[in-house]
Length: 563
Image (tube, rainbow, N blue to C red):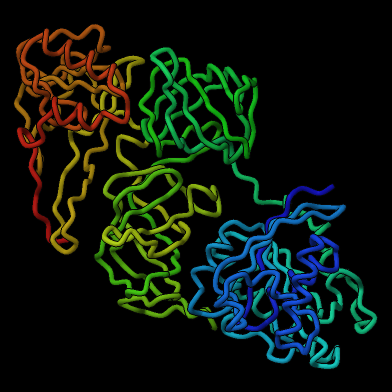
C-alpha cells in the first residue's frame, strides 16, 4: 500500500469540489449505512429533483447548505485498498480565500477543479498560485462538468491549453489533467464510457498511485525545538519533530542560534529509548553538555542553516484591514514567535497575469513580496531549501488575528555573533558576546531595533572599542558570557584574559553580561551567587532572573534614528 496522501480540492465557486469528494466516498462504499440513508433523504429536498446531492456529505454547516457553497474547510479521512487519504474540501468564494490557504498549508497534492463550461477563471488562477506559494508540488486539474459540454474533446483541449499556459507561468511541476463529471460519476472512480478519447486513468486511481516522495528532499538534519523537558534536575531534553534527515546517539549537533556544539546522549521516541530517529518522528533529544537552548531554537547537523534578521517573503494578505508598510507584527516562523516590522512592499502580484505592480498598501486576498525586519536574528532559511524554516505567519499584536501567511524568498543581515563568528577567542575557547551591538529607535516604525556593526574577533592583547553610538563602557571591566560559561577581562581597553567561568576571579571592576548590561554584583560572593542562581533557574523563569540581576541603562542607551 502507498503511504498517506494529504490533498485538497479547490477552484472557483460551484465548480463541484464538494460533489466530487462526496461522489468518491459514495462510489467507493466508504460511508456508513446511516450516512448513506441520510444523504439520500436530504437529497430529496435539495436542488437536484431527488437525485443524490453528493456535496451534502462535505458541506456540514447550515449556512453552507442554504447557500450551496463551501465556507469552512471540511476534512475527511478515508482509506481504499491501495491508500489512506486525508482530504480538505476548501471554499471557492474569494471571500474565503484565507480558509482555502489554511487547507493548502497541510497538503501534498492539490486537485483544482475547472468548470468545463467556463474554463480557467481568475479564482482558479488565484488558488493555483496560493497552492504553489504553500509549497504544493503535485497538481491535478480536474476538468469537471464534462456532461454539460456533451463530453466534447475539442472543449477539453481548449481548457487544457489554458492550463498549460498557467503551468508555465507558475512553474508548476507534476501536473495531470483529467476530464470528468463529479455529478454523473464519469472518470471519478471508474473509467467513463462517455469519454473514450481520454486514455488516462480515473481520478481516484491516479490519487491511489501518485508518488509524492519524488524530489523535494532537504539537506541534513534539523529539528525546531518545541519544548524543553525538565522533569527533575537530572534530565534536560529538547522536544520537537524532526523535519529532515536522521539523528543517532553519539552524533555531533549544533544548536542555533547559540551555535554551540554537543553530542547526542540519548533519544526518546514516545516513551522508548532508541538509537536513531528520522524525519517525521516527534522525539526528545538529550545532550552530553549544557547548552543555551529554549523553545524556538533549532538543532542541526550536516546543513548550512543560519540565523538572519531581515527576510523577504511572499505573503498572502488575509486581514480585513489593509496592509501598510511600517506596522509591526508578531512573526511566527518554525517554533519561534518574535516581533518584526513589515518595512516595505516591494511589489504586489496580479493573480490573473502574474504582473508585478507597485503598491503602497495591500487589500485582503492580495499577494505581495515584502521585506520584514525582525527585532533580533532568528533561525530561518529559504522556503525552497528548508520548508519548515521558510514558512511564516504574521499575527496582529492587538487583535491576535492571523494577518498574513507566506514563505521566505530572500535572506539578509546574517545574525552577527550568532552566525558562528565568535566575538572573543583564545586557543580553543570561543566566546560570543553582543557588547558591541547598537540599539536604535526607528521613528518611522516606533520600534527599537538592534544592529551589530562589529564583525571582528578579538583575542588577548587586542584593544576593543569601548564606545559606540549606543554604548560606552569603562576602560577596565569584565564580561561574563553565561551561555558560553566564559569570562573576558578588559584592562585599559585591552583584553588581558579569556577564561572558562570556573577560573574567573572578580577583581573589583565593573561587570557586564554578554549583552553589555551591567551585572549588579560587586564582590566575589555576589558573582558566585549570580552564577549559581543562573544555573538553577529554569528557562521559563530566566526573564525574572535577568530583571533581578542586570541593568540596561548603565552603559547603554537607545539612539534615535530617522530610518
